Amino acid sequence: METVIETRGLTKTYGTVKALDGLDLSIPRGGVYGVLGPNGAGKSTLFRTLLGLIRPTGGEAIVMGGRIGDAAAMRRMGSMIETPRFPPFLTARQVLEWLGRAHGGVTPTDIAGWLDRVGLAEAADRRVRGFSVGMLQRLGVAAALMTRPDLVILDEPTSGMDPPGIQEMRALIRSLADDDGVTVILASHQLQEVQRVCDRVAIFNKGRVITEGRVSDLTASGERLRLSVTPLARALGVLGDRASLDGDAVVAAIARSETPAVIRALVEAGVEIEEARWIGADLEDVFMTETGWTGVQAGAAKGTAHAG
Image 1 (spheres, helix red, strand yellow):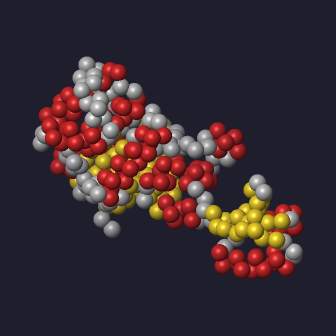
Image 2 (cartoon, rainbow, N blue to C red):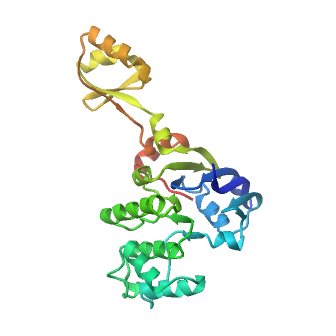
Image 3 (cartoon, helix red, strand yellow):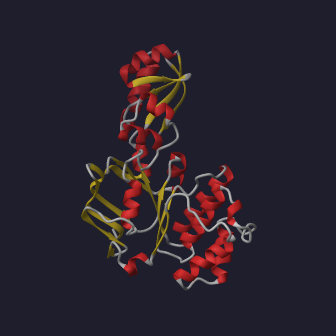
């Protein structure tokens, strides 16, 4: 498997705090790769290290075939880290022209095309001082992409966007991977969006990767059988501690191979089964379990995962 990023024992310390703690990570070429984690997990530190903005304390990283800071490798990358800031007196088009001159090789046609692709064509000649957070995010994404990189890192690209904007950004990110062949590394606190758009994810905690894999595999590991049955009490009696109530249904944590025996046992006990279907754990469940968030924490953070 060809990789675009490879870290081995990557460490970054600030005094006694280890922002990255011997991080080992391989990100394959192609597709959309999600990076998740609670506050202080090390995500932002990793991105800044890979981009050569901060120096690691130890370990090594290979990015696009070169070591950190390699000029040839850096030219093949684009990035937007946190909410971007631009000179407020410039228009969106002028911002990209200004950055394009610094990079070289960016034409007015390229700029117009990317402004259109991120949904800023109508605002291209407006000064950015009046832009909303969501519009600044769009402009930051255009700036990251206009040099046509092979790898792009997008940190919270949908921050400040309304639902239609989030959907448009999701479509853009997928098209970058599927149509343009760009490897996209995405950090987002919107776990439902991550589940929809990412092929693989890594979940960070305390400077380390605690789980990694294909989204479909991670969510399939929490599959449960949901049964609409009557009477509920009798079904719970048959299934025992493997089952729990989910509204007016019963959810059972069993293996698929057990399904025929379970259905047969319920029928023999006089339980009427209206529906039986498999439901998978969502990425939110996986995140909460892997990072140890429970109870009040999980309830307060439902739907979000903050990356540090």
